[in-house]
Length: 296
Image (cartoon, rainbow, N blue to C red; front, side):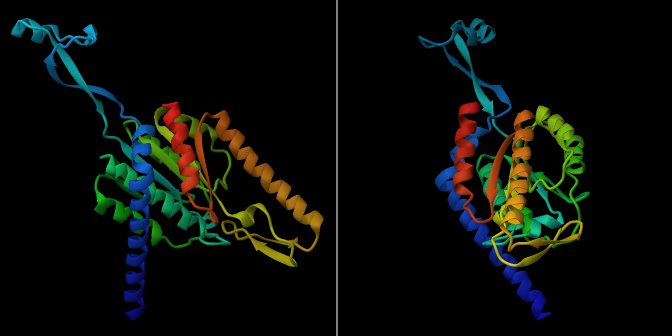
């Protein structure tokens, strides 16, 4: 019982820490950038007012003008409310981390910043967690308490050692989100053969991939013989980390895989953010939001 109480307290403390840090980043850096980067779906009529010199004649409301025997123009506001859907990879590989945190913890921090940015702009936030199947779906809602529920689900997620099926997650989103939404896919992109489904989702929604990586996945330091285990398949390989040629081949292979991911996303015209477990998320998010402000 004591262990259970301790775990609950640790979970609550972790959630609170992430909330405080994320809110500070949102307030200081990302709230305005989020709003500028993800415009509303369009404009809607809000009111009328008397015509003033310089007003666009195309906005004149002729019915109101005729009724009041004076010129009136229509006023429009941005239809701001949108839905942010966070799609989180919860497969076995996401629990790997060689430095400050695991990829799952990195995803939790990025998701928190995005979620708090969204609710500050009066958007709804939802969560979909997946491995080789849909693990958990939390429908989009507004408010701080809802975001805390989402963070609790992410932080309390335990390793199951399952594989990755990006297509299953995106197919679920396609059938669930009827209106255009902002969709962030947070994944380490272990799986392949996702291009067709991504292309379809990107055509309907404002789709962004957040690629998560650990530096040890890119380059193994020179040491001794290493036994490496795939966290998803549980397959094991032996790497001669004492030999420079073997390390070079490993680094070249991993760099080629990363470049393939980048080129695939670029060819599909999908925006991407690249995060590493040993680096702050601030720089990457800042660059992304600046890029999006110019693009929209």
